[in-house]
Amino acid sequence: MGDSGGHMNASPADITLPADLRPTDGRFGSGPSKVRAEALAALVATGPTYLGTSHRQSPVRSVVGRLRAGMADLFALPDGYEVVFGNGGAAYFWDVAVSSLIRRRSQHLNFGNFSESFTMAVANAPHLDAPDVIESPAGTHPETTPNPDVDAYAITQNETSTGVAMDVRRPVPAEEGLVLVDATSAAGGMLVDPTQFDVYYFSPQKGFGADGGLWIAICSPAALARVAEIKAGGRWIPESLSLATAVDNARLDQTYNTPGLATLFLMNDQLEWILANGGLAWAAARSATSTGILYDWAEASAFATPFVANPADRSPVVATIDFDAAVDATAVNKALRANGIVDTEPYRRLGRNQLRVAVYPSVDPDDVTRLTGAIDYVVAALS
Ligand SMILES: *Cc1c(COP(=O)(O)O)cnc(C)c1O
Image 1 (tube, helix red, strand yellow):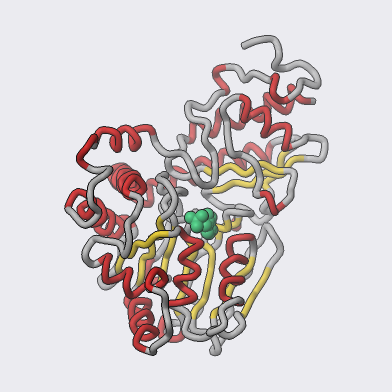
Image 2: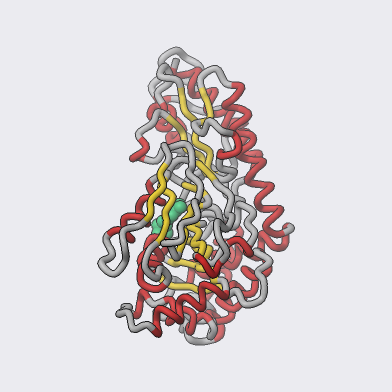
């Protein structure tokens, strides 16, 4: 290293981390997140046999088939649950839910930007009643409350904008209301009991360490029955928003229109990697170890504090860490970025003096330990 680090009042871009504080991989983004080098190498190794071939033929359909079977294995899905895919990502799936899953009125827990966005999509839908909205301040989460007027309960297992996680638990039996879980940043990195949800939907560029553009929805028999009921009821549903159409295609290991083949491949590689290492329990424990390193470090730090006050609500996959006013998180992030540690910036609209660090299963906990050392080093150099 040069003599720049450790000086008083260094400017962020001039701080050079010592080699032992540099993570082997500096990607800590909440999404797109770290793609494992091995997964990318495996994609490259397919040469001319996969990318650039038809998604209606076996090389691609067999990847979709393995994904469906692997998801059933990973989440220990009961009989009758189905894994369905479509283009557009989790945000697009909100519109699919508005079209194909909510009968008349849904309840929403608003506790951050992602949960609020789904609520907004529902509130704007002319064919649905105004949603039943329960809010809580950023850094906490509300609880679902049984409401006989509601036919679907929308919850977010991990609010990626604030780093708050919540349990997935039915407020009422499925006959009285479906449980729709936005698991975009939770899936693959947090445990879940599939008997407690009807739809568990997510995108591949977070815990599954792949690329974006796709939504995946695990649907219970009650959810599949709702989809059929709404379709039969004659509601106008554009084809690309029709979950019934997506289900029909998934049963043939296909999607309604052309998916990103690289995304499917990378996602399946990650799924097989998690299964080979011990499955969801292993992946969840690995992420919890990583966030534990961050929260313990922050609790012990003179300048950092976990943003989420209640330890039970702290996300095991996305840690948000507040800094004292004396430490400028923007400058810290700039110095980290200059050293190849990227995407630790806070969620923009939360507007806090903080770092947000995603540690999905792809991230090596040893790299998280190096990151905490790197932050301490940068803060000392800046002060
Ligand atoms: C990232 C994210 C989304 C949006 O995912 P896209 O793939 O960008 O559509 C939705 N909900 C949560 C909780 C997220 O973290």
